[in-house]
Amino acid sequence: MIALIRGTLVSFNDKSCLVMTASGLGYEVHVSAMGLQNMPGQGEELELHTSMVVREDALDLYGFFTRDERETFNVLLNAPKLGPKTALAILGIFSPSQIQKIINTEDEAALTQVPGIGSKTARRLILDLKDRLGFISPQHEDPRPAPGPRGVRQDVLAGLTSLGYSAAEVTPLLDEVLEKEPDLDVSSAIRAVLKEKAREKLG
Image (cartoon, rainbow, N blue to C red; front, side, top):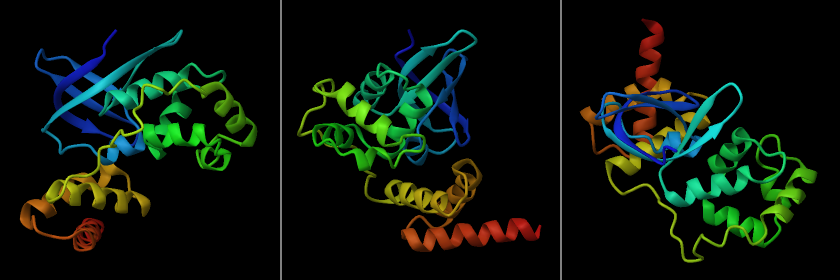
């Protein structure tokens, strides 16, 4: 089993990233929407805690920035009738500690925010996951964007993806903008990227 991948981020799209390890092997790793927002720039170092899902026709790797995320993903996979795509979608919206709180408080409404999860599925998940997320400390601090350029970068990516742009589409432009003007705040950086995007369309 491949439990950890460390290497250089080659590229990423809306669903996965390609990581080149020091041995020369390139791994395609599926990541959550939250994971995509936290991606470093292309060519930068990246470390992911991974879980391998074996199917009849494929072997898929799913990657996470923390062990808690990976372990929560594995617990979700053990719930009846819950596949890796839905498990990843849950972690794309909620952190491990948020999921723990949702299960403990039986918050069905929160779970139904996830595409593909209705009230019936939410109720079943709450029953199935009771007492199975104890490995997450109640005092667990979820990673947040760091202050400074990296934090701004993540917030800008989140803002642009909420406008309908893919992370892969706008990341190169964002990197260029922040390289030229590293002290931009979030709103100014978003405007700068949108301006560059408009220039691209004009050709």
